[in-house]
Length: 212
Image: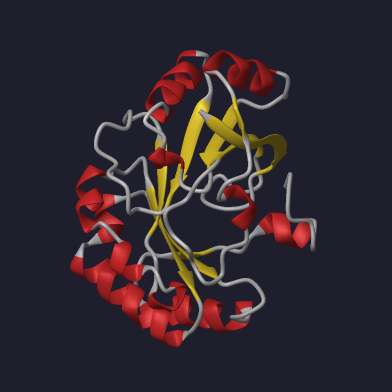
């Protein structure tokens, strides 16, 4: 499959935030979110075999692996990669935009599904059927650019009863757009079992776009 980059860093988001992790970023995405910070993953990369990927990851002192993109679920071979990592004893997470079917993903993989809010310009691509394939092992994330996004996300959360379906429902502010304090207040006041997160890697390494 086509790999954009493999690197070792601190997991910056999700309930795994703060843990050392190996990252496998696959090339290609079928969305163009307004706030995208990984446009370089749209097409850049090189073909690597699963054996090469596993060998690269094994050089890092981490037992947590995040498969991300781009949109990793565009790669049919990703299921075999999951299996290879799981069989080697890794805890495996996948970050997905939620627009590509998740049926068939190994239930041991921690799915972190990013439902796109209106300000992304991509919310009409959300595939809500994917919610049926989520378990308490999984997480749903909303990247919020303003109050309208937040209110829209609350409606989706209630409509699909997300807090009872998944382990964590996350709110993340669009970086350098929505103040942390605003989102914190909204989360505190909403009365739902949801959690705010910030992108740790952007705080630890500000201005560094790759390899973190």
